Length: 370
Image (cartoon, rainbow, N blue to C red; front, side, top):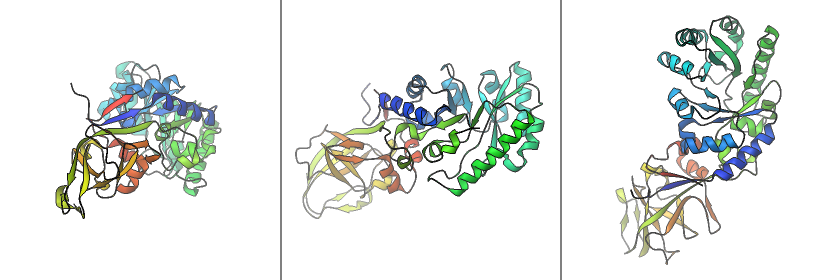
């Protein structure tokens, strides 16, 4: 089989180094490595082994199918999302830790525990202001009083999600943390022993040290592990870039003045120019928003994208790289010759955030771990 034209390179040594730095910052809190959506569009099995070896204590997935990919990894697996009723037995029998979003779901897990003869491991999911799902914080205490006595459940943790932890001192995030701490104190007074207590994801780790001080015992580590130049970068400098996207030139042609480039002829040459066609398009995760705005790096030189990004290709001006030839390496995201393109650059052009960019990397892009 031929090699993939576009490849996502994953530097596992850099990943392990980043995990080590994060562990040092949040100690003695333990690390939950969040590996949703194929580890944020990377390579879940290889990434899981790397972060496990670097000291992660737990994995987190979005649903049962993702959790099954991590089964047998040697670490417990927490399902962060709400379970469908018909998923409960599989989740309990597999020993996954389930998020309990309310009394009704707790009943379903209790019944699944009875049917499977297993104990249902649970983390209580508290809505402190995200508005997505979970027990509303102000009334959660009474609900938990009922849940704790259901047969077959072992409540070993509690967590919440911060809605806006993207800058230090954010008042909304601080309010969420305060409400969560107040509830945790009431539950401790009730005698409920919670070993795993967490509210911090990448933003909390970067900007809110309160989230890795008592009563918190764990943090959830997702995008920040990859050292991506994102909104978290200023809150945690020194992390290494883990991911690079590379491809090659498919063609190099001298086109005459007046030539139109790409679908919709959105770019017209005002003079003769050297134009390169690059393997990689929006089916590979290259944002359509790079059309006539983005750049790539060819032989260490930044080259502008011209014409509309296609499903399988994009076109670039190569006048500053007259020696370019078909087969030459092209950096879509990464560094070369003193130039640098980041996933954050792509996100800014598209008007979105880095999570969406990563999760949009196509299935035909090869994931190459080193």
